[in-house]
Amino acid sequence: MAFLTHFPVAPIHHQSSSLFTRFFLSPKPKTLLIFSSLSPPNFSSTSTIIPSSSLATLEEISLPEETPLQIAREKLFIPPDTEISSEKPPRILKGSNIVVSKYARDAQIVSAEFVKSSVETEACPSDGSPEFALVGRSNVGKSSLLNSIVKRKKLALTSKKPGKTQCINHFRINDSWYLVDLPGYGYASAPHELKQDWNKFTKDYFLNRSTLVSVFLLIDASIPAKKIDLEYASWLGQNQVPMTLIFTKCDKRKKKKNGGKHPEENVQDFQELISKYFDAVPPWIMTSSLTNQGRDEILLHMAQLRNYWLKH
Image 1 (tube, rainbow, N blue to C red):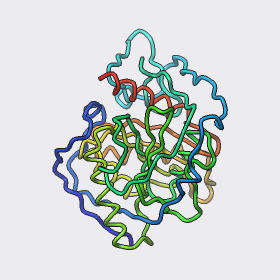
Image 2: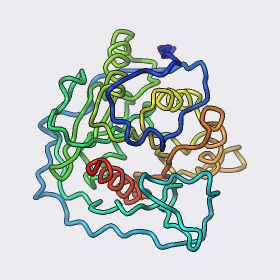
Image 3: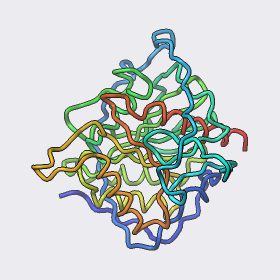
Image 4: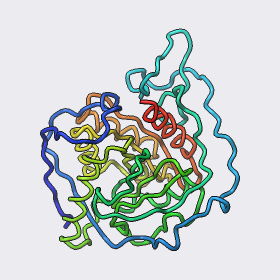
């Protein structure tokens, strides 16, 4: 049985950046229960250091064209310092609800290197560079997505056994910012003591990491919404931790005759369910590590948040 952690409902005062707090809407008050898990790490430091010279030359990531709105205006995520004109439609990242801002530049990745694993926030890199944290339920495809983002097959080694990440793992990108791989939650086979350790250092990281620009919460779009994911998203919002929903495995198609739903339907269902916790949905992107769907959109979203963060 999965370990059950009770998180406080009242807002917690902490030191993490609040630049985007008002853009990631606070949830309606709920009693929150979060499942968490911890297992042995999924890579070694020697196997994940990727010299920049070994990376393929990447083409410039192009911005989307202006297209008529297919998402209700009130369900769009409008980045900070961005205005929408009533005379012409905004540019929206494909497979998302995110409006493109003037800060969407320098998005491509030219180098990626594993830096270190930490078991407490104080031990994380202290150079002040902005960072984005990836977290999700065990077996949601987190390591595969990270590898897809940087176009490397073994930056973060994947495993057939879920729940293999146990530390705060920092990867330095373009020698200027970080991707952070956090332990998956909801893996029942992890020892009780390890789950408690995960809960302690991950919560502390979310609440006290001043260079954290946004948490990317991964949700499996190939299956119906899980209560544990809704509760996790609600806790992040309640504690004013900036968050983006990343729907994974969007290439998988279930057969209708077996009662399965397409990823688009599961994404829509998740939006409806999360509305019970939030006044409006947070930013979200549909992805597939197999087809690289959503990769450029993630990088552009990260770029515009990162560039705004650096300016302010």
